[in-house]
Amino acid sequence: MEPSVEALLSMQTWAVVGLSSNRSRAAWGVAEFLQRKGKRIVPVHPAVEIVHGEQGYASLTDIPFAVDVVDCFVRSSLVGPVVDEAIAIGAKGVWMQLDVIDDEAAARARDAGLTVVMDRCPKIEWRS
Image 1 (cartoon, helix red, strand yellow):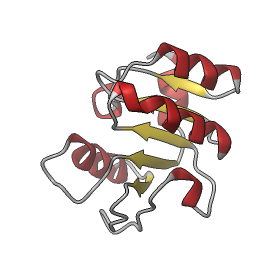
Image 2 (tube, one colour):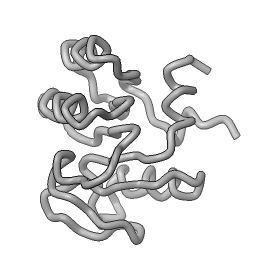
Image 3 (spheres, one colour):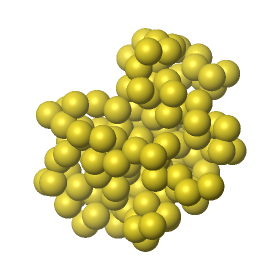
């Protein structure tokens, strides 16, 4: 397993950007999987819903506690500002889901000291 993937999968608190109560969306299933693996998930969505029993927040900056990983379920064209917020809140890593690619945002995150995984899914990468 790639070191950056392994590093992020070992972290505990995952803010899942784009997670709503819509069960047909990939974010819902991945968040459920992460919870089953013992991770704390934090829904981040403008609708601010409770998802999988966890309080949602409208943005990363609204979360009143530390976040380890920001898991991005947004279009590539929208991920840059999410990555910038992840840097601003002091997250340790950014995970851009399958087909979410922004090399400039990834470089900004790495330059800020964050671990970055791009165009991957933790549910697929998990090896246990």
